[in-house]
Amino acid sequence: MGDNQERLSVSSSSLTTAQAEGDSLMIVEESWMIAEERAHEILSVIQPFFVSDRNRNEIIDYVRALIKSHDGIEVFSFGSVPLKTYLPDGDIDMTVITKQNMEDKFFEKMYNTLKSEEGKPEFDVTDVKYIPAQVKVIKCNIRNIAVDISFNQMAGLCALCFLEQVDQLFGRDHLFKRSIILIKAWCYYESRILGANMGLFSTYALSILVLYIINLFHSSLSGPLSVLYKFLDYYGSFDWSNYCISLSGPVPISRLPELMAASPENGQELLLDQKFVRDCVKLYTAPTKPVETNGLEFPIKHLNIVDPLKYSNNLGKSVTIGNVKRVKHAFTLGARKLRDVLSLPGETIGWRLEKYFGNALERNGKGQRQDVKDPVTAFGTGRSELSDLSGDFEGYFGRLASYQNNEFYLRAMNGSTSMQPNVFQNMGKRRGTGTYIPDMSQQLYHARFRGSGAGNSASHHIGASSSCNLSGEVSTSSASIKGEECVKSEPCQSSPPENVGDSISSKTLEMENGKEQESKASQKLKSS
Picture 1 (cartoon, one colour):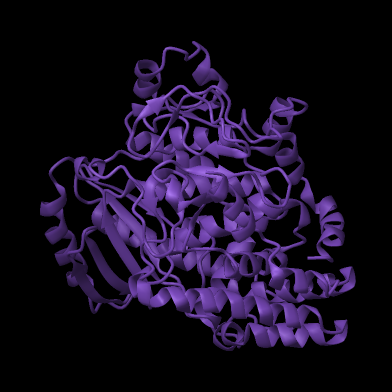
Picture 2 (cartoon, helix red, strand yellow):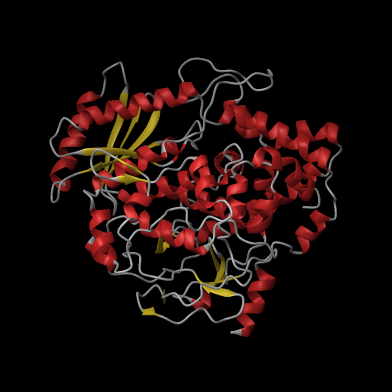
């Protein structure tokens, strides 16, 4: 046990030899300002535009209109499009919610409906295919954008709610989303390591890896480029053979099925504490099909990433053994090249950073964009298209809760004896359907939690709360190992939290007003 803890401290530390060399470069604040500004210009031609949002939303409405002509059908979009973290080449993910035992029958109807649309000029539907995989999917292209239509996949909507909430909590002009877009662009265009269908990372797995970097290094991040630097530096030296990644830190594979994570390696507090993560698990737990309940243990693969919303789901499972070395090499090489760019004199950093993102700019920076028919603003003109990364959390959560037909209420009232009578009044606004939606506004969080003192403890213990491992066994013992904690402290089927934000620390709230903190953060980062 002691050996494992020591190995965890050394092997997964973000300050490896390579990183120490990077730190010795003493990148000055002015260089970071120049680099982040140029990264912002690069982002401006890659991130979603109003016009690209409109085009994709028209496609979603078109598909929804085709499908909802059938009684008892609901259609949701999920993934990077509603989250607004998609690349110009990104697809549209939609899921069709059918009544019980309707799925197989409706597949054929949906396929035939889309096939009948082929050749019609307005939406230009092409290449309609049915993929009879474990998760059945109908694929097609609409207006030259790939569209994947799955069935009864509520986990995607749960993940969307979770990631949108986290982005609002982090604040700082959508630092989380902008970082995802920049890192996705590097992974897709420059290193070619993104794409679960090709044995590489899924976009959700990548988002969770980015989330952990911000969770760990939040106090020293000046912008999306610094998140990319930390991302490559950390995961390029991570001991993937012996550890998996969770939002609470590296977890020794030898300890599984218990998810025991060490305290933060950099000596800082994690931004999202354990109570917040547990509350999200309760609130965003998708209904589980009977076939999914058989395997509760975390499946060990070649790269292991714990899904924060479902601990038995390995988000790294899509990475094949043949691609593991490729992914590791891409991270290591990417970190070294970016470190070289940042160590250059300030006047040369800009064009070298453009070269670093050369493929992305070659494809998207010339005034053409795959998901937009008309010309757009080209890179280097000093102008950019209008863009807004704000998402509709209440709308996403409302659709999720409405689909559950008040199951959240039933679960809360039947599954917990400690639920207070006013629990739902505390959760926020009431809808006409009787569904309570947490109010995610900044003002509410500041007013409700200012000075509450809730946050991470120095030792990062859970305390005496119930704990469980991935096999579903429950105990009431605390996490007694020094410097470690059990990521999962109670069953996922328990009642929803009394307040979504009760566990948000004052540090988290300060991040929402992070614009004034960015200059301080950049000073801290100059030695990174």
